[in-house]
Image (cartoon, rainbow, N blue to C red; front, side, top):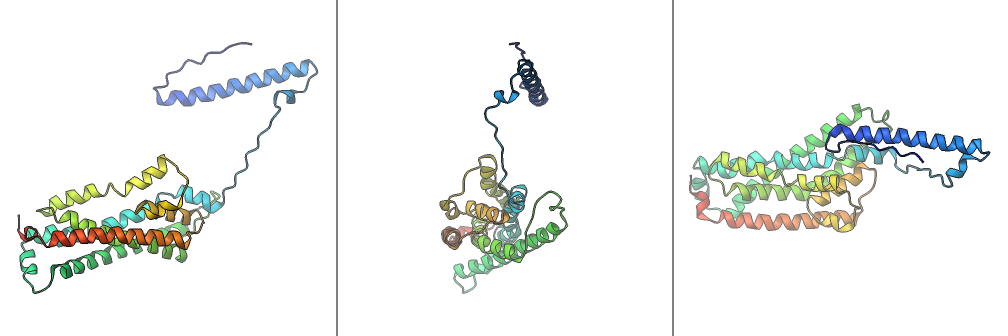
Length: 277
């Protein structure tokens, strides 16, 4: 048996591909030579292959589209986050910088009512941004040649409705969280910096599922951000998200959002918030 040594540098990006290609060619050549030697001795080449493995792809056109467009949940999450971010900054650090919070807090209203009004406005902006994003992807999806790629991308009304339902807790959660974080900033620019760093948080579930593929289990729906990522990915693949999983996603998300809202109410009770920079 002849021995061939392949010498290559694994630290070079193009070396691995060349090594694999050359190794495949040598393996094919070795198989051909072995088969010819068996034939020369009157033996069947099939003796060298006692087992033949045929791989059967069980994926559907829609599941392949779900894998290809798996980044969509991240876009929906980041849209909700960015949609109300600048309004949250203006309602807290912006008014603080303009010295208008003192006059606002002087009104005969409990501060929690003022906060709820601000959160309601931020939620409206976030929902509007999410609506525009979902409609834009639904329209753009009709012009993509997915059928030529052997895929089916279904972003219809049913998909949009389920996305809105799953994203509702994040709308309130992000609104309260942005208001809470921006409340610690003294200037508009400082709040902008804080919330820009906050945008890293939605990347974590997407990166986790992209680089560390795991099997979807029920408890994932109870984790905010991860539950939305898993649920929307399941919808993109053409699957269904059961009502128990939807309820887990909603209940856990609203509970966390309520806790963050209570923390924001506590910050709004502080007189330090009304003091301008």
